Image (cartoon, rainbow, N blue to C red):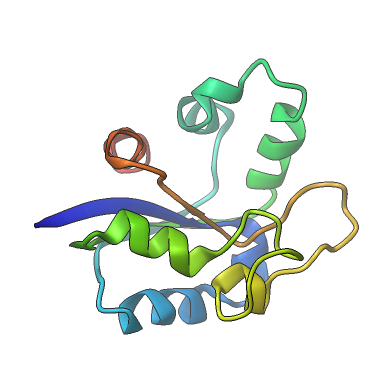
Length: 137
């Protein structure tokens, strides 16, 4: 059974010219890009996306990073795509992410104090549906 997930190529991935490589890895795994757009995130959009984090101390730094440049948002489709894309992405902390993953091969700590980790992917069916509606209303 096919499902959908949201991925965001974050501003550091766009700035470094890695959009094609990230999408290539997702497509090479056999998943399909269903929809895609490039945009610069707004406070309102990020408040909807990160609604569970708005009161946390890291929220402002995280949203400043997410507004620092263009983002590529894409709806990815395929069987077990949520699990598969999260596996392809690797651990959240790029320095600790396994080689062979997007973050493990392409990410690193740049000393900014923020985790710049190239890609976001939904963590479950419920969050995927909500996040897709936020970015593709």
